[in-house]
Amino acid sequence: MEASFYTPDEYNTLPDQPGVYKYYNENQELIYVGKAKSLKKRVSSYFVKNTGVNHKTRRMVREIRKIEITLVNSEFDALLLENNLIKKTQPKYNILLRDDKTYPYLLVTKENFPQIYPTRKMISGKGTYYGPFASVKAMNNVLELIRSLFTIRTCKLDLNPYKIAEQKYKVCLEYHIGNCLGPCEGLQGEPAYMKDIEQAKNILKGNLGVAKAYFKQYMQEAAEKYAFERAQYYKDKLDLLEKYQAKSMVVNPAIKDLDVFTIVTDEKIAYVNFLKIKNGSINITKTVELKKKLDETEPELLLTAIVRLRDQFNSESPEIIVNIEFDEEYEGLNIHVPKIGDKKHLLELSLKNAKYYKKEKALNAGEVADKKFRVLKQLQSDLSLQEMPDHIECFDNSNIQGTNPVASMVCFLNGKPANKEYRHYHIKTVEGPNDFASMTEVVGRRYKRLLEENKPLPKLIVIDGGKGQLSSSVVALKNLGIYGKVPIIGIAKRLEEIYFPEDSYPIHIDKKSESLRLLQRIRDEAHRFAITFHRDMRSKKAFGTMLTEIEGIGPGTSEKLLKHFKSVKKIQDASLEEIEAVIGKSKAEKLLESLAQKKSD
Image (cartoon, rainbow, N blue to C red; front, side, top):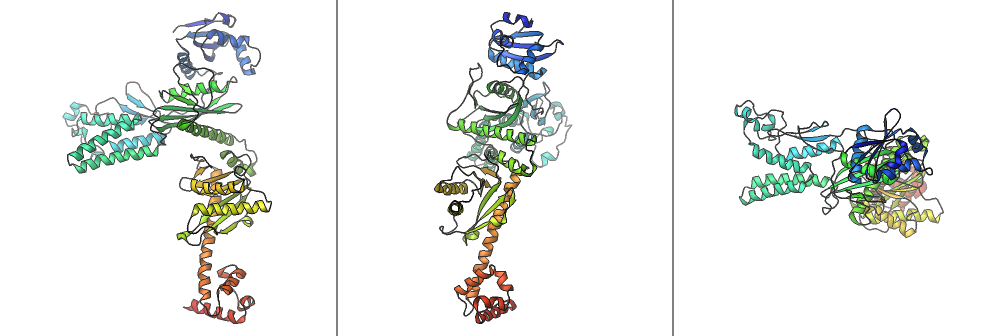
């Protein structure tokens, strides 16, 4: 590929062929790199077009003093060359990925008895690099799996066959605890060692199925020879692989290799989420920012991200799905927008991540100026609510060991508990411990009452529980005709997952986020209020039974006392005169005498 040079006045003489063009200013500085299916048409558009051009593009055109072009065979080749040039030179008018991280790799060294270890530097000839990994944690998870499955050395000895033969080395602690088979002393041959390395490479490539078949074969062979301990050994390895795969978000085993890209934008920045699917599991997830330079369109921004992220993460997936339509096809890139099925669900998951990232960046940039409502506005952003949730109500059930099923509702106004608005509920229409039916009942009762009294509904309803409790609550809202008018979510305690109605994928708010802490506080307050009520109910029930055992005091009298004094403790602390005013002198004396007797016992 040879470069040719032109002046701005010669734009009309450029060839009508695919290629890359570079603009230089009067100081011979490269200011912009672009690609085109037709260099003549594309470059001419900068100098001919007068309307609909933003001021940044006009300023760039005024700076151009020299045009350099490179012809290529196809538009796809132009895309790749453009990406490499921008990465290398970073011209001031080009879109740049705002991601200055150096990502970790796992290196399988090129030597006798290869090592596998993490590195951030790629040195040609040292071995094969796998990655990059989007995070150190993801890399360590894979490395830990490999070291659990295979006996690969962790030492840095030069295991040259001659040095091993001369017995220059002694086995270390790793050998004695079973993590290494001692190749340094010749206790393990290189062919056997390389079998483990080959399977480790399969795992690093994401080909877990090959590694699973490897262990399954050896397990079956051992079982056929009645070597059951050895068969169990391989079964344990197989189980480790299964557990690791289960931790990945399995999409659909029928979906092999696939890249997912979604874009959301604001006035200045585009946010692109990338999901890499390998053998049916999400292998990499990454969100990046692209700062707009020349009023680029969404397809232009997304195409830039696709090329650069695929290059950065060494992706060769044959299929790419996106959330926006492209006006033209690009040779070498199979891009389309799925309309239904698992691929559509993947696209929605990716888009959810892109939107969440955008909201987090907006909050971190200090766009929320009002400190009083900062957390509520952050929560509004995290949950994509139309209004700020300054009125939140949260429900919880309590039926310890299936007894005395009750529920509670706590209310937070402007992010603070409004104790006067708290409510307790006795479960009336449900028999036995049925959390789902109980939640339908109490949510229905609460909002039926508010509607009848013409009182305002909350801006957010929080249900303590996962998809089951949330779905039950939705039933109540639908019965009242207010579903969709009041936002409702469920919060599952185990992983602090936030569920939305009719959405099978939960979202995870940052564990350090103030908005998540507010939700946790509200949920914990509802739980505390329900538990306290439940204990009081059991205590009242037990005390009521004790009262009716006293001669002359039946259920009616017992109920009068509890209704007047409100709690068991207040009855026990009351004077004779106070109790006498409620149930009469004779019964009051018998009650106090009996209570005193039980206390002395």
